[in-house]
Image: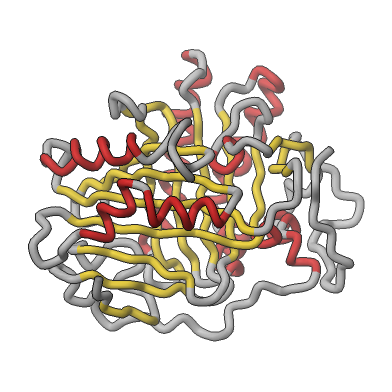
Length: 356
């Protein structure tokens, strides 16, 4: 039996009358009541993977995850991306369904203790820590296939359950349980910084406003045969990158705060997998909805994915999915000796120096 949050609806859903999805989809279900869900991104920023700091970071990440680790994440991944200034970012990502366990991990585990102890004036690398933590009613998910667990779905105590709240504009909003009683509106216009701050040699904390949106949108083709792999790499992936390119061009404008195209790595060898995910921050849900509803780049992605699911049916081996979080006020992200284009450093309305 799957536990769900069900508010009496005061705000009309966007589902069209009589809507029937063109392709099946699944969403994340929970086996028992859950208050806060957590995704924790702790990252190293270096010029390339040959930096000596990489080995130390990987060692500490290994000690801080997995079975037998006190308070460790229920699911974990290693990811990387090259940012706009050409720096390599290596990310240890963890998921928790128990916020208290996460808080204890922050106090006791090797990796977050290393981050907290970094001296920004002397460290030779950059590092950043972004924690996404929301009540369950502020999270929504969708998966094109129910068999392989991605992101939060890899946590024990979750399952993928069928949904018909998909395949129409506004479906993502409708999948937020809280959207039945809350319009998830930003309190006002996003205040953009005039120029990136002087960030090197400093520890800085950025705040994210109420109802800002974090989306992790995944693409998996590791197990695809040659035909489906070729279709993804030559047809669907370029459409996806065109959409991300459009959004990147508008980063800092139209409430697009940050966008990272990350590659999943084997956690032991750090070899890249045929798996990527896009981590995006938006000042308001409407910005993401407007792109999805009205821009040609999203239409190309959506139509191609639906067409191939209809063509291959259950044999479709390219999997797409996403998890979206509507943040509460004063969510904090922290950056140590990072360049000014990292994460939310150049666009947060509140930026504070941190002393440890």
